[in-house]
Image (tube, rainbow, N blue to C red):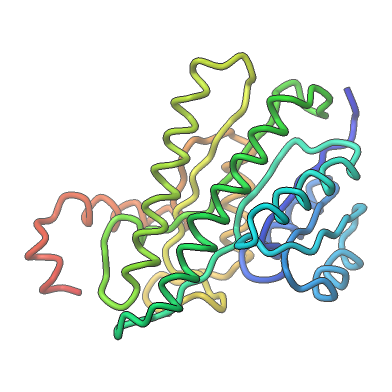
Length: 246
C-alpha cells in the first residue's frame, strides 16, 4: 500500500473541477488534471502544493479519453479518488441539433466512458493509499429533478448521471471491491456553465462541501445543502404547478 493519496479530476481546467483540484491538493492529494485545455491545466498544476499530472483529453472522444485516463492513472503512484466534473450546458430553445448532440456526447457518453474506466481501474488495481478500493464522485445537478425548456438536454443528461451513479452503488453491493460512489447535485454555482440565480455559491464553497462529502464517504450530497429543499419540492410538486412557476 502506498502512503500517497491521489485524485484524478476529469474537467479540472475550470469551475468546480479546478476549485476541487486546489482543495484536494491542500488536503494532501496528488492531483491528476484531465481536460481539453492543456496549458491551463499546467498553470493550475504549477500552483498546487502537491505534485500534479496532466492529461489532455476530450471526454466526447470516448475511446481516446478512456485510453488517456488509464495512462494518467498509471503515471500516478496511487489513484484513490476519481471526480467526473466535465460537462456542458448550452441553452437551446430552438432545438438545434448540434447543441443537443454535444450535450449528450459530453454529459452522457463522455461521463459513462469515464465512470466505467474509473470503476474498472478501482476493481482491478489493488494498490491504494486507503484501505478501500476507491471512491468515484460524479457531478450531477439539481436540474436532474426537472426538465426545463431550453435546457432540456442538460436536465435529461444530469438525470442520467444521477441514476447511473445510483445504479453503480447498487451494483457494488454484489461486488468484492469496496468502492464508494458519491452523487453531487449542485444548484447554482458561479461558473461558466451557470445560468445564475438565487442561492448561487462560489466554486470554492462548492469544493469545500464536496471535499467534506468525500471525507465522510457520503452517497449523495446537495451543494449547497439548502438545495435539497428545492430538489424535494421538484420531486413532489405536480407538473402543472412547476410549469406555472418556471
